Length: 161
Image (cartoon, rainbow, N blue to C red):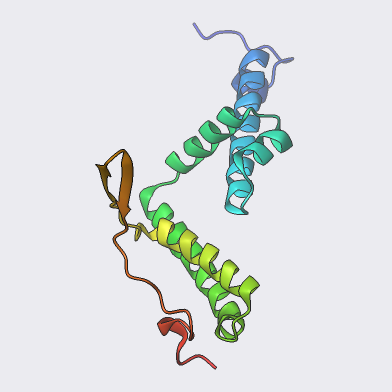
């Protein structure tokens, strides 16, 4: 025998989640939005502490939220995001190129910071190898690079006008 139909209850009411489930879903949505906002701020260059202060996280919670947001990005999207960021950094370097070749120290400093970020993003930085020995109570450190000639423009920029 079919169950009686209550004319005071709509189909939507029967399909709607309970109030506690609705509140839990709303909290989860707000947490995801906050996590994504933290990632956006990090992409704009905010520090973890600045993100924590702005969004009401602790510094550690901000780091965890950003890590979780990055982990949630499918691999293909992460590769596209990385390519987009590299393109953005390349455009910044192109804007600075002329000022760097004229010896503008501020532009050179900015160039180096952007270049460092680009290398980290692409995984180009090799681990630093330092040979250190102790001789007569003194530590002698040998650096694995040659002195740099700073009298002219960097070789990368030699042809930029």
